[in-house]
Image 1: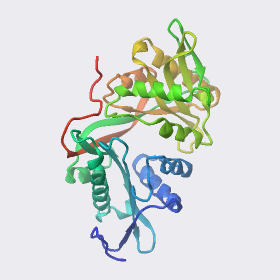
Image 2: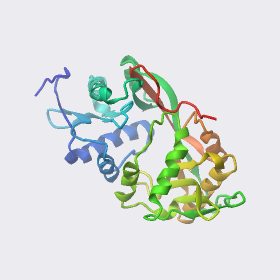
Image 3: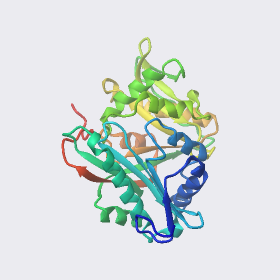
Image 4: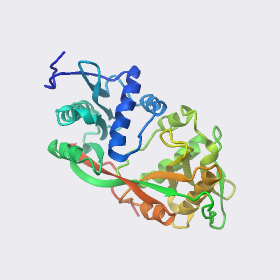
Length: 338
C-alpha cells in the first residue's frame, strides 16, 4: 500500500499492536535523545500504560510505517470520562520529519476525539491537549498550523545531591510525623488523599479512578512502597502523600517523584517541604543522588516555588497546547477556590 486515506505516499497506516512495543519505545527514545539527550520510556512502562483500563490500543492508536516496515511515527489518544479533555501523545522519527507524517497523525487523533464528543455532558466545553519540548520548533509550528494554542509550560526539575553531603533532615510541624506507605492496607485511602489534593491542579476534571491509579503500582515490578511516604497527624490521619520510584526510565542513578500532594487544611505548614526532604534523604542513603519530578510552571498551589526552595532546578521545559472542539462550560480546574 503506497497511498492511504491520509494522502501519505510511500507509507502504511494501521493501529499499534502490543507486538509493536519495542519499535514504539525505540522511536520515542530516538526522539527524546535527539531533543533532550535522555531516553523517555522503557518497554515495561509502555506495556503498563497500554494496559490501563480506559485505554484501547486498537481504537486509540495509529502508526505510520514505511513500506519496508520501519516505524516513521505513531500517536495515541487518551479519552477518559467524562470525555471533555482528550490528550494526544505522538512522535515522528527524526528521519521522517517534514513529510506530512506529523500532520497526518494529529488529524487522525482529532478525528478520533470527535467520535467521543457526543459522550460528553451536553453543556460542557470539550478540548484536545498535547505538548512539545520547548526546543522542538517543528512541533510547535505543526500544532499552531492545526489550530492549537499554547496554554502554559510544564517543567521537569531535578536535584543533584553530593554523595558526601546528605540533604537536610525533614522538619515536621508539631503533631505531624512521616512513615512509609503500607501497600495493601491503605491503598484506597492514599488514592483518595491524592485525588483530593490534586483537585487544585490546573486542568483536572475528575482525576484518576482508583483502578487506573493502582494499575501502575500492581503492574510495576520495581515499585517499592518504602520510598513512598505519608505525612500523618494524630492517630493516623493522612495529611500529605509523596509517591516515588527508585529509578526513572531505566536509569538506576535517577530516582523520580511521581506525585506529591498535601490536603488543603494542612497546607502552608511546611509538610510538602518535609516530605521532599524525607524522600531525598531516603534516596541518598540508597546511593540515588539524583531525584526528579514534573511540575506545572504556573502551579495554582505554588509547587514550583516549593521545589526551588527544596534545592531543585529546571532541566526541561515542555509547552502545552489546546484546541477547543466544542465551546461550553469548562468543567476543569482553572483556579483554586477559596
